Image 1 (cartoon, helix red, strand yellow):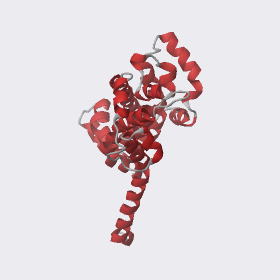
Image 2: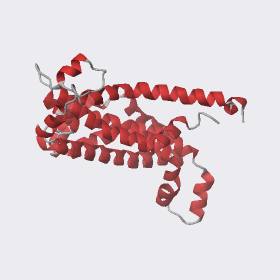
Image 3: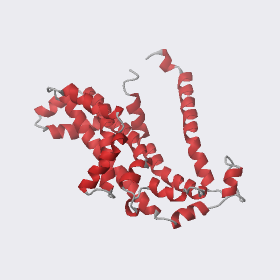
Image 4: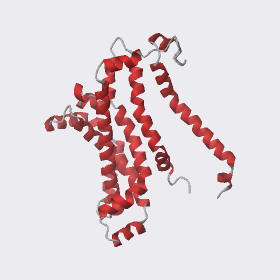
Length: 279
């Protein structure tokens, strides 16, 4: 082990830097949450102050629960996000395994073709996507959003997980084949457990854009019964008047799933980001 890794000072400095970065990243979240519990006048007068007996107010949360169907919006966002992540991880892992494990003509070209999706934003094809959804009768359905987000997340998922798939021991897979395991069992029982850090990384990187997206819900699913949380929160933002108490309260509630996901997958996420960086 190198002297740099044995030095306790380096460990303390690394933890201190991580703490500073965490505080910087969480500061906007902290400001949103504390202001959601304050009156409108207190928000503009002292935005960085904690709520006290004079400024404390729950009017924002009361407005969110009374106007619109917040729980329906939350449910729709949860269904779309979880469904999209499931298909992204499933199909992305299967495609990555095929590209990494099997050598066939056009393997490299197929990988490059899938990687193009990272460089070309899917929003360029919004008009064509809308026409396709209209023709298939999927407008104003959650399936329209799930399909679009799955297509949006697959290129990055294949790109990340294919590198991890190549690091899985060939001896382990060959031993499974000798024991009579099918390729599907090798994939699900031997390979997937070893690439959990990559899957956690893909899940977090895709979850946040899907949960916070406003563009495709506004274009493909604007109906009241299929509105997502981000789109439903726009009811409090007007052309001339904005209900900041309700907006901040809705944002505070919307942050919770992202924070829970980060806490659950943080260890796997860090392993996925730093895998191969330190030998």
